[in-house]
Image 1 (spheres, helix red, strand yellow):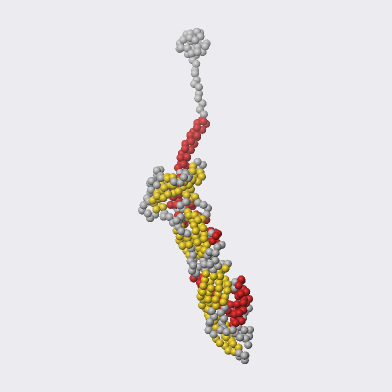
Image 2 (cartoon, rainbow, N blue to C red):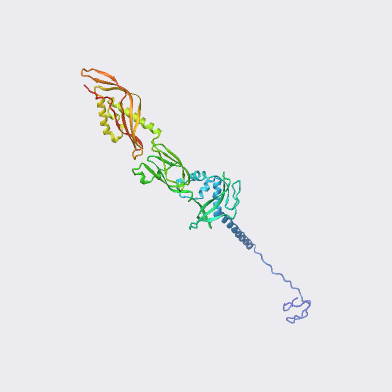
Length: 427
């Protein structure tokens, strides 16, 4: 209870206030109700704290997950997974490669992926390797070996694989190099291709050959010093090639074509392409061309056609000497009054024979003997104006000279053998 005068608490049923001495009347005693002070709850604060806690937990979990995903072991395993599942596009994007046409995705698929035994199962080394199907399962006790190289950005991840056709597993190494950052905090990686590519591989081929590497023209890679020299060979320097078997084809306008499947590695020798013998197609073409040219000029000569009618058959730089030789042939075998050879007619296929050739020279040449089959009349006038006709057998053997100029075989000269044993005489 409390004193009505001073308001201080006094014992129950007190008559006098022990604090102020004032008498206490029972009528004046009134109970005082004490109300407890209320506590105000801030709901926004509680929600904010809850959100922060959830975010912190999420960040911790997310960090742990991303760290695991960004680990070099996971990256190496993902690369092998892409190779095993033939996801060439993704596997190719994971490579650290210079920009070169011979290192394209198609080349990678044909040389690296298609020439490698198919992977049936894989796991990080020392992990659990499934026996039947491709699996992502791997053990945390993976083998990660830092390279001996002083560059700390390089590392090797050992992965155990089960290849198609092999009863046992083997460990392959995936070489990784750091390549920037991933998710802002973690290292990003690329698969090193140091053991996948060969630099500056030499291919040598005959002059004028067209060389393709896996279907790609490599004429842009001709070594400058060989293109302007007197050598009959050209050297191509290929800046980059994938290690593996490549298709190399050298086609030539007159020599036999050469096609090889060549295993390219860092220890291989330079590649020599081409043959020094002519192709069957070329032999047919050049002998037919020699026969045609000789027959045209021979026919024009014995019929006393002007040289201008055959001048376009000669190479332009040899026109003057060719004109002189043609005039001598006409003068020896015919006369303006009709003596000599007349009624000339090519009666069958000519026989041709290559006398000599230098097909590997800077300017290739070939000399062909042509013997045409023909019939003719020989008219020899006498002083009395009479004459006689004599049928002579085919007996004219000429020589045609060719050179390979501006990408085509052109006639650079021709030796017209006289048909008559003695010059035609005009009386």
